[in-house]
Length: 453
Image (cartoon, rainbow, N blue to C red; front, side, top):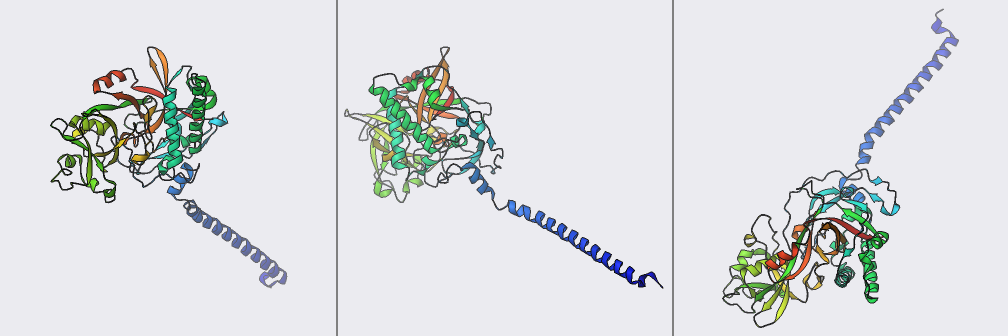
């Protein structure tokens, strides 16, 4: 009798067969499950799109501090940096680097830089530009009364215009060092309090003492970032001024170049954005011109006086009748300043308004911050931020010098610009006196931000 027909053998063979089938089925199922997991994993990684990653990493301090806004910038007085827009690069993933001092701990993130039209230009790593530091032991040079005025006016701008000028709430590059807008306001408030106390007691302000600053402020060194000059480490310090010019309230043979003011009832259609500087100077607003009556002539200057007024943003006119008045840029024609083109050939044109003081940053003419020479810097308000306290270190006559001021002005040359500040030097009768004065000022300096601890 064949062994296959033995009942015991058949039973043993059946059990073995069932066991083999069970093991094989289990193995196939496990392999299938693992394969499905591998298929699904890339899909899970895509749930957070790249723009969301940038937002989450870059603006983790406050969801209300957006990266871009669509509102036009009306305080830009200078030229625009013209660079092409690169593709967005991946954010730096080494985000958390421990620091021995918890108050100075930083978060390494890539920060997106925008231009004056709120368009992305490039990204930077904050830790490569900003670093915790200490001030050297040298007295801080500052006019405490003028500094107090600019601090108070800047703080008031935050209080009154944050809702209608969201640009000032941008976190700025300092957010990579865990500095928030609230920290900036706390810094302004503290400095205002200190100055008021010191002035009331008729004493030199404590803000001139580097030891006091090191004890009460985070000192953050600012290394210049210039894509066109990678070796530049110190900030370039340019200078601007308000010039006095003779002028007339009516056209004369000498004073034949007008500065115009837009009429409020004609602003809505933005007709003025259609015309270049050359169009305006050709007489389109004068009697017989195609746009006669749409603007108001404020004063008449020489052509050179007009160019200086357009470049500096503010002009003090001494009229032939003995009166004098400040005039400040109000709105431009929406055309960018082009580097390398001489001023008289530029297409950008500014319309003016009469003002009661030198004016700095502001989203509209009647909201601009009143500023003072010697304590005011023009800088990149969109990417660095309004109201940032800056202290410059340089050497003069073999001795260290420290100069304090606040970013309360801006301009097209600073949008974007992470390597330069413009120092408001004063009011001068002419270019020669201005140049003579600024010879004593540094061309480059080491820069620090001060943030209240």
